Length: 228
Image 1 (spheres, rainbow, N blue to C red):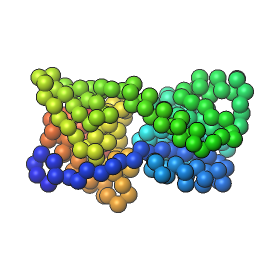
Image 2: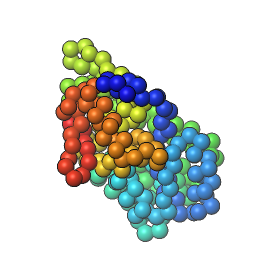
Image 3: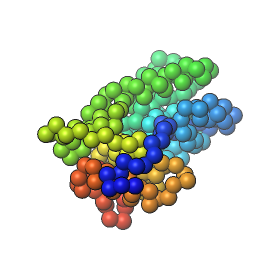
Image 4: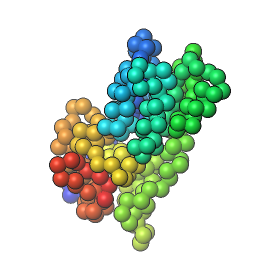
């Protein structure tokens, strides 16, 4: 790769989805359906789902409301308290108005009552992702105005920098949670693939710094990286 980091092959990066569902048969069916569009991580308990949501970066969360131990509403509440704004859709057999209100009040973005059609679930997830991305048209990265949807940054003097797909996914992950320190493994799972090594993150952080300045990404010694 040359010094400007433009020789990396572009790749289509699928959105990351966390599915938390304790019904193993339904979970398997959902994974098969959703895997056509998303990289799906599945968990079967609320505690395991919350741990995954706090450790890794996802584009959307799909949670069953009634989970063993920590229920879906408690998971959403904890996720929001942690400052994670990822859109959340709750699945449930509890379809009363009070149930829906409590789920939405916890911080969920949408609510789908079982039994449901998979095509409707897919449509609702697409709408959630569109709405979330449109609500974040411009983030600040140092002195840059950043559009995660397009992967373009604009400087105060009119400069324009276009990121590769992988660079954009990495920077979006960091910038959407500006107070969070990400481990290399968490960034690897969010922006790359299981075949890549954690050193890939160091390489792409270097590319971002070359394009945006050394302070664009901060190294937190012994922990990982966060947005500068």
